[in-house]
Image 1 (spheres, rainbow, N blue to C red):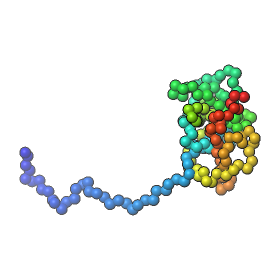
Image 2: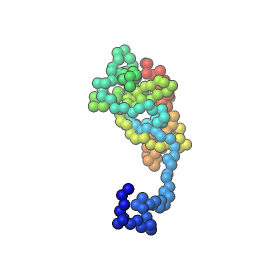
Image 3: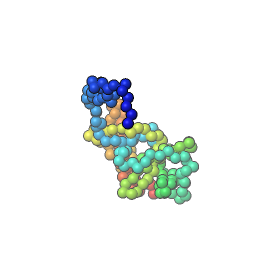
Image 4: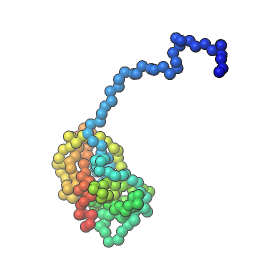
Length: 181
């Protein structure tokens, strides 16, 4: 045992790990609504999908999308998603856009949606942001092209009424017979 007679311990001295008073309570704002992914198709129209129906958001090089012969022009081909073959379709064309998505670029943005084990990659122009959107504020869409109507659940009016954000139904998109035509 080592003794040090010069070592003095001041009983009144507080240890260096003394508890610090907690700052005043901070109010944490809980977001309203549900998480959605906002994104754009080739024409610049902005859409949203519920985050719960999205399996992954991907950026794929066009040469990694394998074109398939004798299929709808809306289908760009297939990708290998973790060992699983997944079809990739042009969402803009499905929704009635006349101009196909340009894949003459470094990466193609793909949203992989899933329902009951069925996965489909939706090729889009640009990924936007993840946002909390309140389903209670969803309105019926007033004017829609016939080609888009089966896939729209409603719309939010945002930016002080200057912009609408359309909510897509990923199950209707995934199960649409239009992919085969």
